[in-house]
Image (cartoon, rainbow, N blue to C red; front, side, top):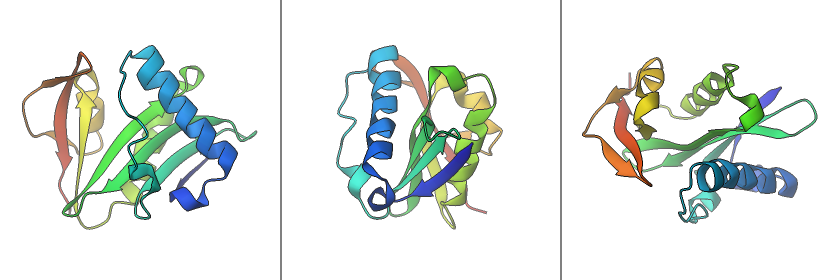
Length: 144
């Protein structure tokens, strides 16, 4: 198992394809959220793609870290169906946080996952809202 956090330019074509396929499978197909995943922010030089691969190079998990100026934003956190329930998502979030120095980090968590994100120091910072018919809450991890 290996995990990396790299800019778009460092992704080889097969990894990039696999990353976007995973996001599509999880968010669009499984969760029924038809949304513009390819929003242009993947290409920004300051964006970091957290990619978890097995020993054969198969993408099992991902996250995306965006530079929003005053804060960092973590999103697109997903695990392949076969990788869930094994604690692997912890490594995704830890790696994402490593590339977020000196500023607050925000995310929009599925409400059911807010307690899990709290284990990384995130706190709910606003009211619950629906995104694609799934309850979410805004969360923040304050800079040290």
